[in-house]
Image 1 (tube, rainbow, N blue to C red):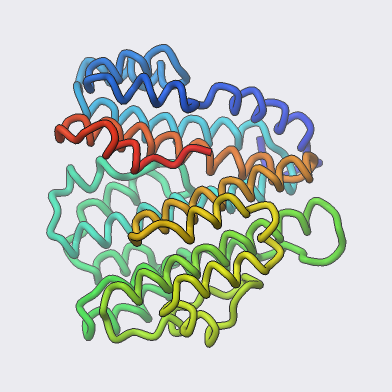
Image 2: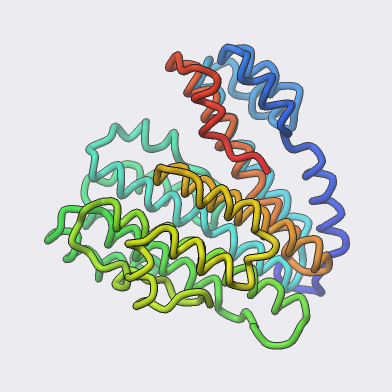
Length: 350
């Protein structure tokens, strides 16, 4: 619909609830783990991915078909949610879905950095944000970081990326560019969001604060494990409540203390099981997966507590993204000949 008119959370969340009931569950994943890629695509044809599979099936096969269908399915699903919404709810959903603009800019930047073939870059785009196809196609074809910066002039990413480009040239790493993209996204996301009171707006703000808290924790650990001489405080994303930049610099060096801080915070009770998992894993990938699982759980709790807010929509967006990531991991792992138990360890199921 549009940003005009009154918000309609009751209608939108009823539609979202029906879609959530169709998400793949643990039993679906168990079945997929026993299938070849062509069998996985046929299984997807009996799900909400039927349309993309049928449209793309004449041009692609195997894992390529699965990848394209997943990305197309995400874009279609989120476009439908925007079509259902009005007023402030529409604006909140549209702003949140700009995470895919951020994803697509990062994908283009990584493509330039790794000298990736444009077709491979295009494969990884999720066309569900505000950027139109023309801009995305030009980002795919960009041959330098400067070219990407020029293309994004006038968007919320343009100035932050331009400012980070010098640091990228000095360090030769993508950290500065990717962090600039994240910061621009979250700064835009918080515009007009209130943290006061106890209404739907404050419920949304609390969820966004949690997402930023978890992203800061993840980024700090990534930087600490990279071995780069970079202070996590320099890449702190404002808007969360759990850390200060200085605290994050210290906690990034001690995973156990980081888990303890989260456990003692407002997230502790509802995330106890996920935090136990965080404390037990012995790899950065496992830690990030547990963090993502914790955020999924927090979003679901927020949706149940605030059914007349945007929270049920955001919880569904995260769950749908995770579904696509899980299916993608199974398809890629199967094609690579990985053992099902190895693939299963990469999934996040909540």
